Length: 182
Length: 182
Image (cartoon, rainbow over all chains, first blue to last red; front, side):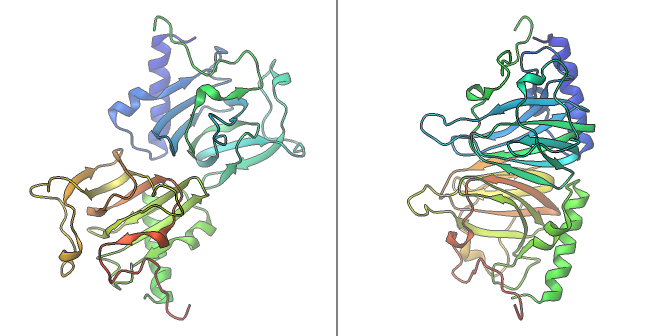
């Protein structure tokens, strides 16, 4: 749950981060930025700014904005209506981001799960992305990611996005952010 | 047909245009930029710089670079192996680009087909895109596009790209650029 005032402020913050990365948005797009707090009410810790460019029944492209050390919590994209789950490519545009996937746990990782929620993080193989680097994730694969100390802008190229079908490891997470009074 | 020297120079030119638009590429990506002259040997007139970020059997994302007034010639993306043709979204990142599709011819259009090849252009409904604006093209729809006087960088989000299956209106066009001695 966030207030309408915080929503507006966060949208400006995210639009500024996109602008500093050289990404031009229309006025309508700036107002359409999604501020996802995943229902935990601690946006700076667990959250994501999302602008969906296009999401048809075949293709999706988004721009993701992350504050310093902000985490997108662990989840996977299962099959939906008989179609294979979402396939995603993350491309780092500015800052840095560490993506965690199944595999041998990386010693001395760049990121740690948010405090108090450690039990809801189960994969620890690190793929660290700097600007110009990218990683393609197979469908239905558990993953979470966290921005480095300077935040991050990450482009996501994928098959159709059905956020409401995402399966989060943390049972308290609600993918759809509630806005007070909305 | 272009020379290996021209290929290297054009790649540098395209990488510079991407850099000025704020797009960071790895060294390997800079060397992978495709310089498409469509077999006409007049790259500045009919051509495209292309960097493929990802092209799986479901999703494709590319960055396109266009010199001032450079044209990507008229073509369509037919069904391939029983799958619907490529669905494309073009998003203008810098400069400007005019996309032409079927529909009422736009009076006083921003672009004209390259001289001497007018007969191979048949659709003239204009969609002009400035930075932050985008357009989604349905599969198998004829289209061509031309950059404005300052050139353009255009992001393309699409289903799988099978360039070799593209159907060009101009029978002299060869999609795959030949490099001398290669």
